[in-house]
Length: 118
View 1 (cartoon, one colour):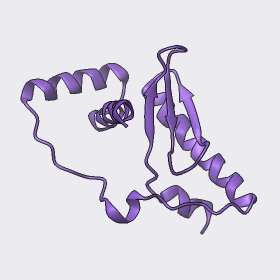
View 2 (cartoon, one colour):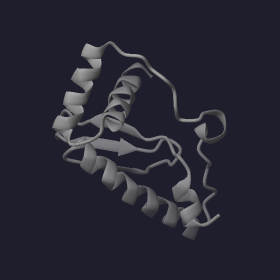
View 3 (cartoon, helix red, strand yellow):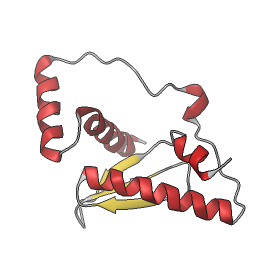
């Protein structure tokens, strides 16, 4: 596989708020050691794309066996969730404050809370 083939795969991304240093940290659990950070959620997500590419390039160059994402075969990445209108409004407002769309914001919230309970 080429670097572009790997970049097209949907590797799960985890986003954590850094309560000590500030900003946000992003990691890819299926790509050990692949992580980055940014001042905002949007910046951290953008930096994650670069970190993923750099990690994959180094892994290919070193002949490392790159694991395919677990979720690729078993999960579509989509599910339908009905929300109360008031919660939908709050999520949309918070996403707007962060400068990201509501889907990215919900992924951040779910990732952060999932990490707390994992």
